Amino acid sequence: MPIRTTAVAVAKARGMSKRRLAKETGLSVRTIYSLEDGSQPSGKAIEAIMRVFPDLSYERLFVPTDSSILKPKARRTLQDQEKAEAVA
Image (cartoon, rainbow, N blue to C red):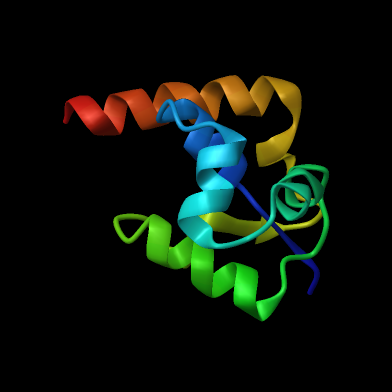
């Protein structure tokens, strides 16, 4: 099943820029933009993203390509959820 990542939205919700996410994952900025646009993450990208967000599960960071979690309205919900988790 094709997947995409929520990592860019999670990073943004945590105040992390795409450039910083690229640096911390070891991926290129171009790859980060590509992932944000819905590209299938490679095994290397999956491992790198999991290392940067050890507090989040695979299921939280990677969703089916057809998932509605990354639609514009859902991104706001994702950010709100991140803020709520940070407070808890």
